[in-house]
Image (cartoon, rainbow, N blue to C red; front, side, top):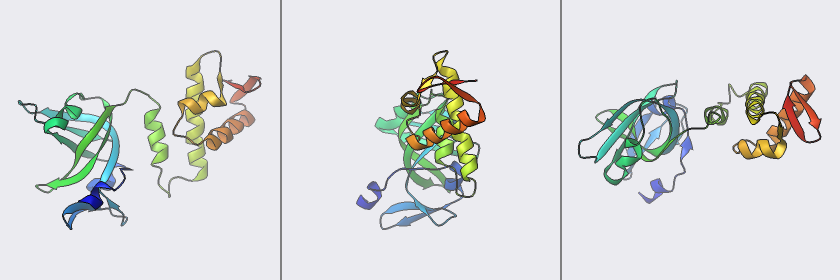
Amino acid sequence: MAENSQLASKKVHIDKIVSGEYVESEGYGVLRAADGSELSRVRILGTIVDKFVSDDGEYSSVTLDDSTETIRAKSFKKRASTLAKLEVGDIADVTGTIREYDDEIYINSFVAQKIIDPNFELLRRIELAQPEEAQPGKLHEDVEALILKTISETGADGASLDGLASVLKDLDDNDILEAVKSLLHKGDLYEPVRGVFKQV
């Protein structure tokens, strides 16, 4: 059991979980994904499409849809409130361990957070880009789109590199810099004051 608790949470698409095989090994369970990797603790982002809370409040579950597949997340006893506070239609970031019961693979949730930031989904999509789809050009386009969206939301004052980095915390500073340079070169951005960027 100690080995299982030490495994880091991995951000994945839901289809990678539900297409895998759950295996009990040495007192704990792991999921063997189709690509050969093993998963135990995962972090998933999806829209809540269904919800259930028991009358006594000791059990709650939500069904999450991330456009690749759907999966149920469940929480019990003291942790039941983590899912009970969410509502159908919410976008939620859920962390938990993979379990199986009655041939259903589900997430035993211990952390669940409603997502408000509209940039969060795009950031996660960039993070989860698979090798076959994460060609440099495609990934670069995603970063550029996110930068343009962020600058458009900052208003008339524009945004500095530090300002972009503070908002887009999950992106590498070099990726932000390269994307800004590319947008300047293409004429999508301009620099009215040194170090401040505005959308054309």
